[in-house]
Every structure is written in C-alpha cells, then in structure tokens.
Image 1 (cartoon, rainbow, N blue to C red):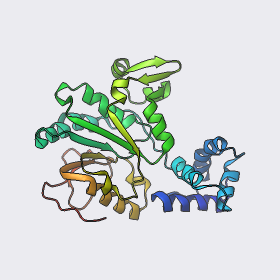
Image 2 (image 1 turned 135 degrees about the vertical axis):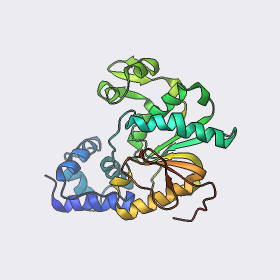
Image 3 (image 1 turned 60 degrees about the horizontal axis):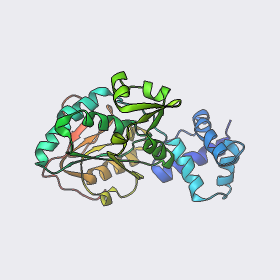
Image 4 (image 1 turned 90 degrees about the horizontal axis):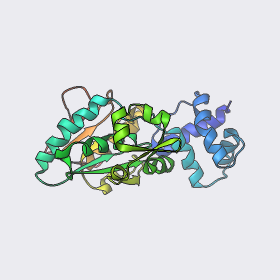
Length: 273
C-alpha cells in the first residue's frame, strides 16, 4: 500500500495542476493508476516513483505523467446513447440552419481515448444532410490518451463497450487482435493537448462544446473555473454538453430532455473566468 504521505502528495499535485478532486484515502485507486506508469518510466514500484518526485527528483514530464494517469476517464463508445441521438438529429442540424452556410465547429474537450468524438464522427458520416457541414476537434489532458485516440486502434473489449455490431462492420477493419477505425473517420478529427484549467479563450469559438462527465472529477472551485472557461469558447447561440447529472449554471439554459445539454443565448456577453 502506498504510504499516506505519498497519497497526499499525489492528491495535492493533481489539485494544483488540473483541479482534480482526489481522495488521498483511496490508496488502491492511486496505486492501480500509477503502477503501469511507474513500470513504463523504469521504477520498480509506484512508491519509488512517487518518492523520487516528492524528494525533488524527476522532471516536469514525470509530474504530468502522474496527473494524467489519475485523470484517466471512464470512456466507451456512444456513452449515454440518447445524447448522441439528440446531438445528431436535433442539436447539430439546428446549428447548421442557424449558421446559414458556415461550418458548425464541434469540440470534444476531454476526449480520452477517442470514443466520444469518434462516436459523433461516425454518426455524422452516416447522416448525409450533415456531410461537409461540421468540423470536429478533440483534446485531452493526457498525451498517452491522445496517441491512442489518433491511432484509431481498439481492442475487442473496447469495441464491445457500446459499439453496435453494424457500426463495427461499417467503420472498422480487423487488424491482428485489434480493430482499426477507417482512415476516413480518423481524418475528420483535429487533435490537441489541452488543460481545461488554462485560458481556453485562445482556441477560438465553437458552436458545440462537449465536456461530459468531467466536472464531477473536479473540486467545486475548479468546476466553476472550467465552466466559465468553456462559456468563453461558445459562439453566441452555442450549445454545451455536460454529463447527465452535471450543471452549467449562469446564463446557460438547459435544453429539454434532461440530457445535460445547455444553450448559450444569442445575445450573451462573455466575461473573463
């Protein structure tokens, strides 16, 4: 078991770097997340890995490796399927009409290993009226997750989690023990590493921003900051997708259906978060 002093160090590091709410008493979670990272970095155990950093050794990359491992999200294809149905059949078509010929810009802000943004990309590809009208962007805190996402390679277990068989046949090819997503779908996405605690206004405006099941991992103070930052990225009349039980607050209006979807008024005025 990781010592209490090391667990407290990890919790404090995650809070400072990413606003993450980490229970220092959950030693098993911390150990299970950090064990593969420790091996990858050449340490004999998570304890040795954390101890090195706590004693002032290691570079900034290793500090971020801990934060990224702890922040690793639970992800699957078409998670909360009704949300994707609403996005493709209602929210995005409405935005297409409102934008009157300008492309609808969609950003998945915590894309994990890519299942969320690829789920949306496959639905858009299978919806002819949306062809050529949507631009997709994705980001995550973790470099490792982004590498996995961009590869488009998923295990049998990963594709079985939420991916319909007909979609697997249509958009994937068997590649050894893995399934490879078609280049056509992968090329629909533009990727970038982003920390949601940073100033997000520099990334421009988006018509639809997805930040689903992220706020619950953050401290209350970090939640307020991240929602404020996300609002800065929304174009007037833009939509924000949060988790089913997450709240946006402020001037964002919940859309009907209880799906964690919110709208920013056309005349909303942004303020610095």
